Amino acid sequence: MKEGFYWIQFNGLVQIALLLTGGARDVERDQKARDYWLIDGGVEVEHGDNVKVVYGPLDIHV
Image (tube, rainbow, N blue to C red; front, top):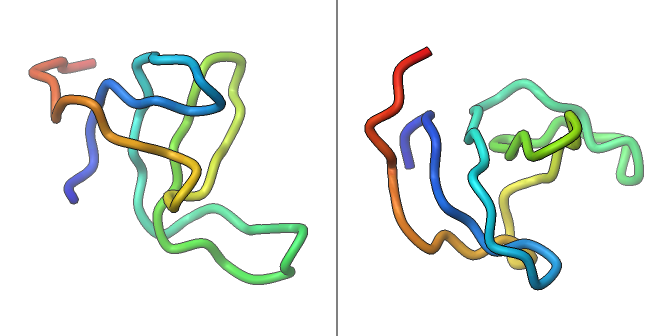
């Protein structure tokens, strides 16, 4: 997947999130996460089974 904004489902909520690649660190596993989502409130979530992409990428430019 390419970096950008997507509609995702996470913890039962559907929301817009920004997908970033290759920069976050998973502190629980003490390893670098390959791709991660930046969601509301600045929360970083590793791309994986707990995130479902609903739609995207969106045509949003910032």
